[in-house]
Each structure stands twice: as C-alpha cells, then as structure tokens.
Amino acid sequence: MKAVLHTHYGSPDLLELREVDKPIPKANQVLIGIHATTVSTGDCNVRNFTFVTKSMRPIAKLMFGIGKPWKERILGTELAGEVEGAGQDVTRFKTGDRVVASTGMAGGGHAQYACLPEAGAVVIKPDSLSWEEAVAIPFGANTALYFLRDLGKIRAGQELLIIGASGAIGSAGVQLAKHFGVTVAGVCSSANVELVKSLGADRVIDYTRDDFTKNGKTYDLIFDVVGATTFDRCKHSLKPSGVFLQNIMELTDVVRVLWTSIASRKKIKGGVAINNLKRMSFIAELVAAGNSGRSSTEPIRWSGSRKRSRMWSEGTRRELS
Image (cartoon, rainbow, N blue to C red; front, side, top):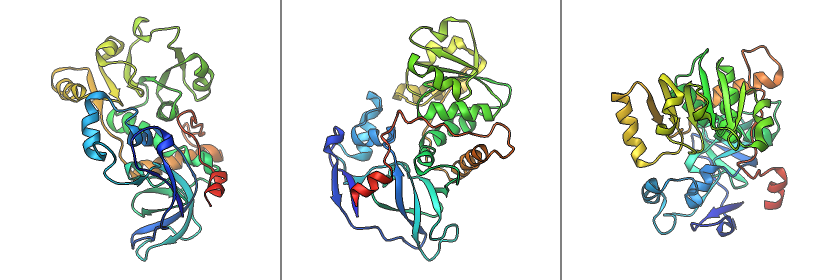
C-alpha cells in the first residue's frame, strides 16, 4: 500500500510518499480501508512541534526523537473507512462496517489501510454523514468533551467562554456545551463570527474589536483552546469558584494547576485528551441523533470546522492507489 511517512522534523515538504507493507490485523484488531483522514494539530505537533510551548518542547523531543524522529511513522490522528478484515478475537465489528476512529499519537491515518485495536476509539459511522463529515469528529470533539465534561464538570445553567471558538476543538465545544444546557460565549476573529453564531453560541466576541477581560462579564468556565491568554489575565473574568481550562500549557502552568487546586477557589485545569472509546461512542450517538432528527436534548447537528485541517478524501485515496 502507499502511505505518507514522517522521517524528519520540518515542513510538510519533508514528508515522503512511499510504498509500504499492507498491515495484517492481529487477533484483536480490525483492518480498515481508509476513505478520509485529516491533518490535525496533533499531526503538526509530531511533525514539527508546531503547537508545543518552548518549555514543553524538550519533553516532546525526548518522546518522539531529539534530532530526528526515533522511528519513521505514518501520521494521521483520525480516519474514516470500511472494515475489510478482522482478527479472530474481534466481536464488535464485521467486514463491511463503516467506521470512524481516533488513532491519537499512534497515527496511521495517512495511508490506504490501518489496523486498529477493536477496543480502541473506533465506532460505527453515522449513516447521515459523509466520510469527510465523519472524519472531522474525533480530534476536536474528543478534546472538547474531555475538557468540558471530564475536567470542567460542566452542567446546565452555567456560563462558558470559549477562546478559539471557530477551530476544530472550539466549534465542537460550542455544540457540546449547548447540548449540556450551558450559555456559551465564543471568542474568534471577525471572519468567523457568523460561523460561531451558526454553531449555537449565545454571544460571539470578535477579539479584534473587543477585549472580553474588560467588559466586567464573568463565567463559570473559561476554555482557552488556542493558548491565546493566561489564567492571570482571565481570573477577574471568572466567577468566585470558576475554572480556567487550558489546552496548551507551559511547565510553569503544570505547577500552577497543582497550586490552585490547593490554595485558590478559582482553579486551573489542563491535560491531554487521550483516545477514549466511551467519549467517541457518546459523540457519535449525539451526532447520529442530531443528523437524523431523532428527539434529543440539543443533539449535535454536526458542523465541524475544516480550518484546522487539509482533508484527504476518496479522491486522495485514488491518487495513492
């Protein structure tokens, strides 16, 4: 099969299109013929640490390789495709199933085929979505759900501010927050105001014109998706027991997470949204309910942002074949 391999740090031009062995599923794996994938910020981080802060870069290089990657790898953190084979122990899927999956830092999506564990973040693709629509789900929605529900303990009646509301994570966050019954304000550029409104945001703040820290408004949760601000700058915009959710962190922020957990009513929380089957299943069910018109409390009528990724579709697969 053909695949795009990451062999050196640097620009996308250094990626190599090669012929590699087609993977063979192990006893607990499914073989997926890939119809669509994306280039996510996760891929950019592995390729060149694009969104890794300076203090965290040495740790990232120890993980992935100091001068160059420790090993050649196929990037691609999310994929959608059809099950073409399965190991002898697989019971959740059968040949012909159409699935969407998150591969996380294991990658593998930038190829014609991938083998993934049955117990991984692999779910049946909602019939109402195209391959391209379905593949936009895993990265942003999984991350947003982890921060808002699992870390932030979001609940109905709260007020939330999302900084970076028009990207993959932010656009999913707006829709998920509305599902949970939360009042949402989104911060974005002028070009994306209408997009964020269409996702269901109750208020949209154009950061080129307004500074949300100076209008006196306070929130139960502030979710900084893009690393655009700091806890110190935002703390006066948090309610007395508010939480600042931080997606991109410096080493000093890790210390502050621990400190605020002990010494402050206002908290900083951050982490890494690793692959999770339960989160993927929850998201897929919401998307399926929203697109089918079935009754549900604020179902997700999926509107994933494509700004953060260059989509690979069936056309790309034909080019690789």
